[in-house]
Length: 251
Image (cartoon, rainbow, N blue to C red; front, top):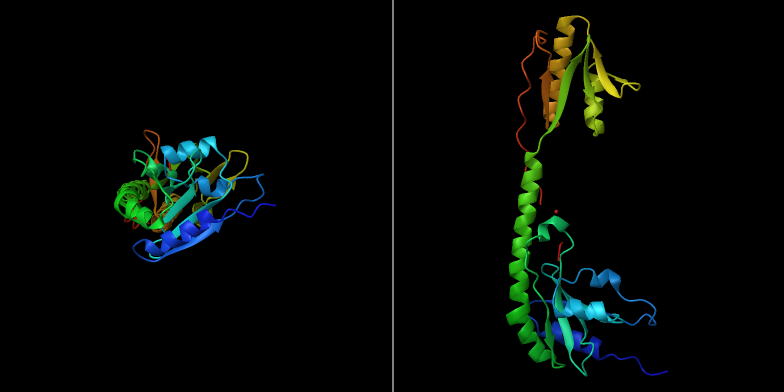
């Protein structure tokens, strides 16, 4: 049996020590030629020569460098079809939604020779700046998406149906619980929550109470009534303060 080729592993280990900051190197060896490393190649952020090489050749072994400060990852593979050298590409962060990568130019990888010291200069001066620029754009997109989602308020619409006040079954269990706790009963046949029309003062009190509770949950309430039907003696619930923006690839 021929000795395993460890040149990529050695190259990656030396390169990790030459890059600015603290980097670790993890070598992923050949698994016997029957499978490739899909779980890693799927995150390679490249639409140029590295993507072309992965499409044409099986990635039988590779290495991943990880920067301890922020989790930035670099993917290293043999330069298939050439006598020597390696391909290095940035890997997309795993904590951003796919939508955040739309419209972002990929920080395409680079080809380097077998000298890890020269390669470190190319990575530092070419690849990492492109990666930082693309990452900033993707993170900005993710922030905009989070803000848009936060600004989209859930809403419960209460509608008169004959002598009953009804609302559609909500997707959220906490909304259903609030309705039940304030007099609404789930009608399985109609797939609706129903507040039977009884004493008007009691109905008004129930609407006020459920509106207040839903407001606490970040849910708006709209009372829809047919023309000519008096509304319960209640003021509409005030919309809640928008929740704080929470921080979560076409490549």
